[in-house]
Image (cartoon, rainbow, N blue to C red; front, top):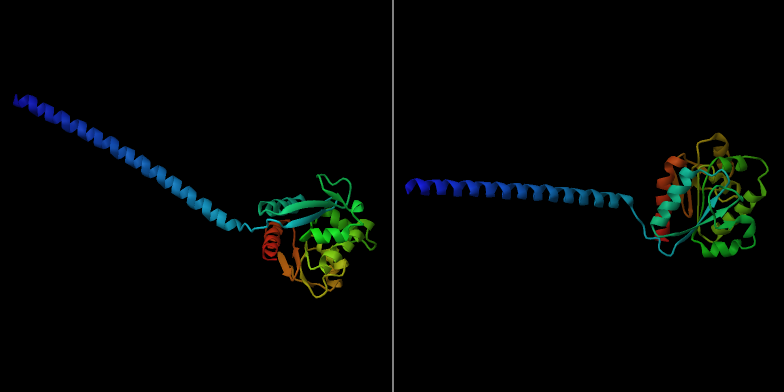
Length: 234
């Protein structure tokens, strides 16, 4: 009888230990899962905080593209502004630019004042196609039309932004006199800025009143964020 009770006791102890082991393993699994979830959430919120998403709801931005524009500047700028809630429309200076667009400059040449009223900012993307057309002595007609549009935006106090070779468009339009500005580090472009009265800095991004200029593809993200920041405060 005593032997039977001892055996029963040992069995109960064994089952209790096995049950405790199962519970312990379950608790450890739960702890690990919770740690993973908490870690993932922490990373998510850190990244979200670093994204600096500005509120651009009800803001309208006109992005200008040339044939031969730089995609590494266009896509980060457009995508970020749209992510912030801005309405982004594309104005093309040429019929075939490789992407879809909303307006062709010759079709809206008699509506420049309306465009400057309707949009909060004009942003000119750079690239090889801009460089070819802005470094020649006699500017092509479409570039002269763009300069007219830029001047109207500037006169209305709207944000005017340009990156890479595009700040030279602003300089030749005469709106960079006394303005701190940057551009792609090319001697021809730098000379155009200086001849236009700009204070060339060579920085990645320059903000001077209502004018924002960017250095090139590597600065596209910072350029886009400064545009968004400016518009969110306007």
